[in-house]
Amino acid sequence: MRNLSWIILFPLAVALIIFAVSNRDVVSVDLWPLPFAIEIPLFVLLFAALVIGVMWGGVATWVSGGAARKAARAKAREARRADNEIKNLKDQVSKLEADVRSGEEHRAAALGETRDTNVLAAAPRNTPGLPPPANH
Image (cartoon, rainbow, N blue to C red; front, side):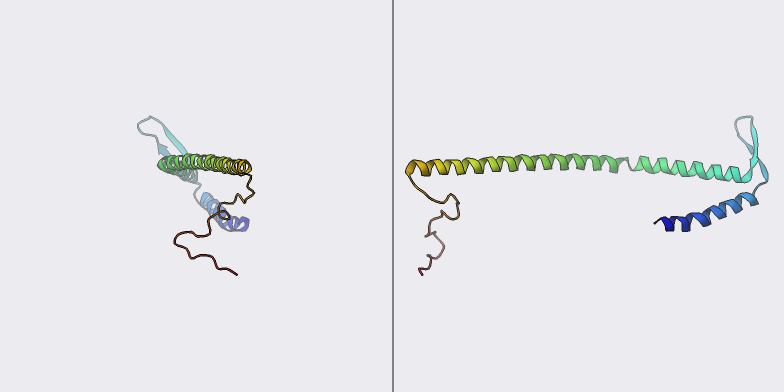
C-alpha cells in the first residue's frame, strides 16, 4: 500500500511542480465588490482554488453523510440494547434452570428417590406417538 501511494503521489508532485514553474506569470485578481485588486502568480491562484474546492467538497460530503451517521449510531444503540437483553435473558434462563434442578433434587430427596435430573433421561418410556422401546 505504501508503494502504491508513492507510485501515485510522485508523478502528481512532479506534474504540480512543472505546472507551477510553467505558470509563474503574475495575474491581477479583482475582488469585486471590494475595491481591491491582488496581483499573484497564476499557479498560486489555481492552487488556492484547488484547495478551497477540495475543502468545500469535503464539507459537503460530511454534511450529506449526516443521515447515514445518525442511522449508524441508532443501529449501534439498538445492537447494544439487544446484546444487553440477550445477556439478561441468558442470566434468567440459567437462574431458572438452577431453580428447576434445585426443586427436582429437593423433591427427589423428600420422596427418597434417586433419579437422574436430566429431563430427557427422565422422560417416560411409552411416549404417545413414539414406538415402544425395543427389548434386548
